[in-house]
Image 1 (cartoon, rainbow, N blue to C red):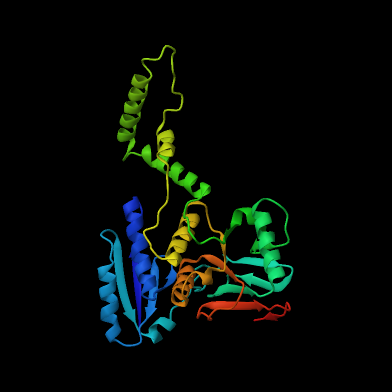
Image 2: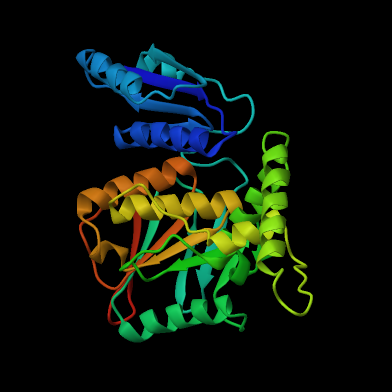
Length: 318
């Protein structure tokens, strides 16, 4: 037996976006897997589970939008016809990134329904790979190659390296700049235009009054809503307390404001439990994030993991 959830949620305001994220995270936490955008499914082993699952959906439902559920048997579900494309958890056909490092005779791709884990027990090779990625992120040449459908990609633009988790900061110059630009556009939209004009006018009056007593004339040349937003100091904060959840929030921010990237984590398993790691990679898969986890030693194997081990003698073990 399987339950399918269909939803169409508004994302016009920040409150709408938070409600949408909360609902999706609640589904994923309960074991739902994304079939395609806004369609999630979960396998139910017994009919009695259906009521508890539906109660969870009702408990976490947003106030706006449309949410629908449909329960089908596995036999019915298996007869689904794919008119265009094919089903792949967390992504669509034609959206495959491949990562290659010449010193490791293996191609890491995001085409399957698993997360790639690369375990490098040889410290020299471990350092060599990370140094190569870091160099390319700084604009230098390197040996590592990232491609999409046989087209080479610029690692500095299309790869995100996460190797510091204490503390884990969601803020970056690129993301914050995009958020400021987005806030500026909203400020001059029909909804906020009148309030924006009034606020800028009041600030101009205040600044002119402050400068009135000076002997020389003082002009303020950059009085705009954009300058006020920047002066306010935009910071991104996560409502999540766990590290794994915060990283997923960061993935979502990067994807929303910068675009799709390959995320590479370094020794993340040292900072989260096996249970959190399992949920983390399932969430990454369901959202379609391209992820490569690099570790320096082995941890407990996860169910959605495709693992390659390079031992201390540089032997490859799949």
